[in-house]
Length: 138
Image (tube, rainbow, N blue to C red; front, top):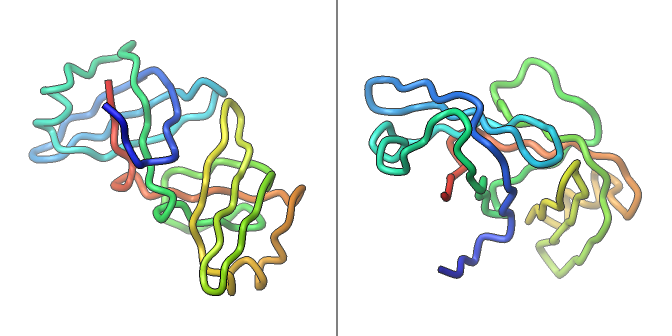
């Protein structure tokens, strides 16, 4: 199956915490960082997810936000430090490539945000991703 989702990070499930309708799944990415996915309990069961399962964490580029410094007091679970490696800007939007441990993330953000943050190649950033925006594939 081919997907249009650019961000596909390989990893291994380290924990599954089922709830009434949703489950949280902790994944250790190939680069050593941890990411949390909040998926339906049914999906976790259907995928057969248990500690040790090999997965790919999938995140649409439009669901990746960027900060130029660590952010405190925020409910977003997934905070991956990295460095801007590429930047393509258009009239309104930009595509920003960020090298993180074990891979590259792409963030689709506004050109105005790129300008406000002073983003360019080599700038350190933190990629922020809500757990509810992380899908898992086996």
